[in-house]
Image 1: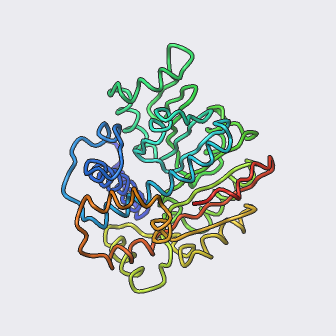
Image 2: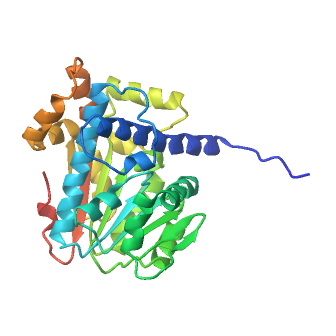
Image 3: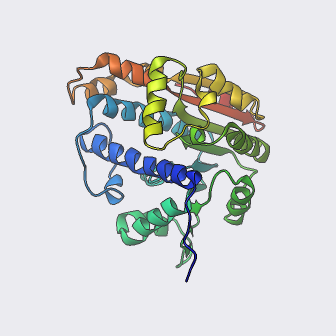
Length: 325
């Protein structure tokens, strides 16, 4: 008789982190269904629009999507698409399909996440033609390299790896034609905060050492030392989500400092309230007319406790430090 598998606190914590993927995807599905932005692909990952989300949550996701995309698209344009993107902890993100539709495809788009998340995403891609067709259209042979934990084509690759294992991450990315010599964009959204400071530091060091011309976009919590931040931490802890890396989320300065101490040459950070104010205001006015917002102060508090931090190294002198809002 097989020995019964025992589960540790670490397993429970990892499962809770994986569950945040579903939370984010259902929130994005709802907000896009209300018209905050267009995402024709998210329906293939989450069938139901689900329960109504509060207007401040929808506006928060709008700021997040628009803010990250603003920097991501600027990087791709600055390199004339001669670049690669690595989405760390990508979940059920649909950016690859958006970039193809908008003729902003990088040389190759990599996604990395827990093997269980990746297996589910691969199943969705395999069984939904609107997802698989763009991969096939950009692939030069008749067959894709596919197994339970990875899918590789000429322009898109998804790999199941624990990001805390930097050695395996490096090995697998290079096996799937990662090219350290071309400009590289790394993206993480609420990922580093679930790692210990030592684990996230190793990841940031690896990226800084591997790529000579690169940008890293990190969307994450900030200003977490006040009472509102403590309530956020306690709420997540009740769901078994321990923010192991919250130390780096004390302030915008601490967010920038983690990159500068890990070998990145330049770093900027803005809280999401500031980002929201820098987005195209005609579009902000459009989305603000979609739903009445009663809790304006709550929205402001939420946005002040998240940030986008972006760092770069620029050996090729592309002017990456000029990329901003």
